[in-house]
Image (tube, rainbow, N blue to C red; front, side):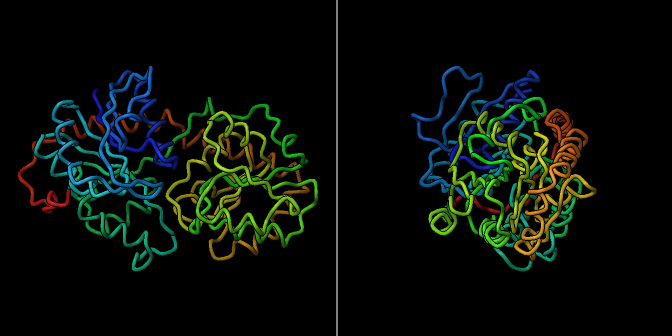
Length: 388
């Protein structure tokens, strides 16, 4: 099968990881993949890859959203016409191209699948306020014209259906992890930090990630000097937070770590992984930490609470992160047996529900389903082509 994949390769974010892992796994299964992404001509093709890459012109791109050039839709249309894939899969990049894709694919008679990554707070089910709520409301009328939309949890599916997307067009396929690569193993990360017990946050340093709540709790808990908190990642809040939480408190700022093997080493050498986010989709970093056998604490934002519920980790309330962590951090610092037990349960939960192998099998079945769909009648798609 030939899949035309529209996704991200930079800057680094969860969408980049998702696109890389899924397309590599599809290649391993013998499928042909063409990768379309926003890039300059000189950064589009990496030597030695077995993937046809197509650069799409852009004016601006970030970890959150992308602004294409006015002619990007014409470039995309021409590329899809030339490639003539069996199916188009868009790992949505929060760009105006997301809205014109149904028109383009309908004109070319190509089945169209989307993965909708937008995070959310699972407690706010009415979706009446907040940026992520508005994003769901904005996207729903367009997702109704995709042949299938993949989301990561049943809650997300219910929200999109409530907003008008037909139930048969919304599928739940959770993120999956390569459990051979992300697995318990040797690591000297604790020795590198110079600590007995290691705690780690890995992700963007941004408001929605609620890192400051973790740092406040760490400071107020007065953690022992042989415990260290590693903050792995970068973002707009890093300079201001780093100025107030530093080595004197046992906080180690490691910055962005692009090397995957290094991130695996960090996760393997972490005793407790903490994700205090206010909004989430389904965190790949959380699943990767769990797969490495690390005890995990995460809020019930998005689907993360669902991943940990039933004893696979500790679920925090988004409203009480500092208070809860102030109690839990010293507890985990002293009780190694508890972290070992939770790490084993976390690993087993991933093996049971969140392997990349099962993810790809379900994705292949979804592709087969859209390829055998009956010919659609002319639709009343929103007129958006003039945007680009």
